[in-house]
Amino acid sequence: MYSSEHSNDEKLDALFRAFQAACPDRDPSVSFMPGVWQRIEARRRFTFSFHHMANGFVTAAVALTIVLGVYMSLPHTKASPNSPISYLEALADANTLDTPEIVGPVRLDLSESVQ
Amino acid sequence: MLVDFELIERAQKGDAAAFNEVVTAYRKRIMGVVTRLIARPEDVEDVAQEVFLRLYYSLDQLRTAQVFEPWLYRLTVNAAYDYLRKQRRRQEFRMSDLSEQQVMMADAAAGGRVEHNEQQQKKIRESVDSLLGAVSEADRILLMLKEVEGLSLKELEKIYKVNENALKVRLFRARQRVLKAFAASAKREQTS
Image 1: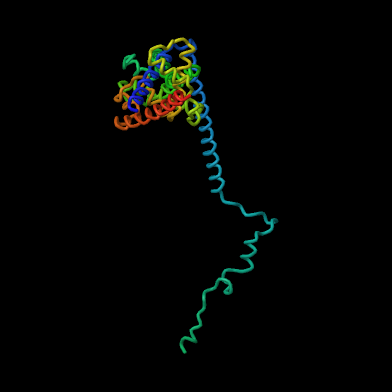
Image 2: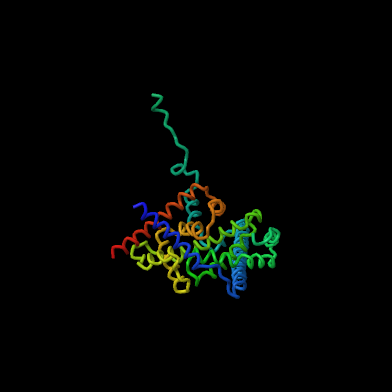
């Protein structure tokens, strides 16, 4: 049993040695260096265009934020007299805030508690 | 070191000529390592170019030129690992993957009778490639670096940044798995 394991160990080592001999260091082709630089340039172009696009997006987002901010900060002019009043305005006219049934102060009838 | 530290420092500063010199000095060695790690000659140049591409874009992260070689090995290991993972050609390890021919090949290798013609070399590459199907891509690379590239545990420690004992355990387990596959194949050959 032990000798068989030992023998397999040796055989595996031999196979690895043979593998090393079967895969020697080899010279690269003439297109190796140009290929490396092509890849570097391609990556650089991609990074540049992505960076450019991201910058454009950020600029557009900032511009939009400023425009919206300015728009929101402007006082809104009242609707023209010809236009119908809004629902909320109509409701406010019909039920003023001092209408007791709606929002008046709670009135306590103290007469019963005194008795 | 195949190049001066000064050349690496120049390449780090963006000197294209210096980078070219570094690539020229190391390309043959890196191609050899990649050949043995992936065992597919047709894709070696592609993976080696990927290594140097990664080197170009990560040179600025290199702390000191003294650790350049382990750094380059690490990039090579990572590129080979990514390639092997992408390939996914090795499916689940099956006993049938190991042919009788592989066992005969190992016997012949042990006896020093292997003829190193292209056909034989191809068969050896295929045998080892198939045997290494018994372990994960990461273990395969680790095993290759130790058994075939002949790197010491100290060198592996620098590449993987893992302590020696952990590496020993991992290597032992990986080798045991490959041995088990090899033994099963040998047993099958004996019974047939």
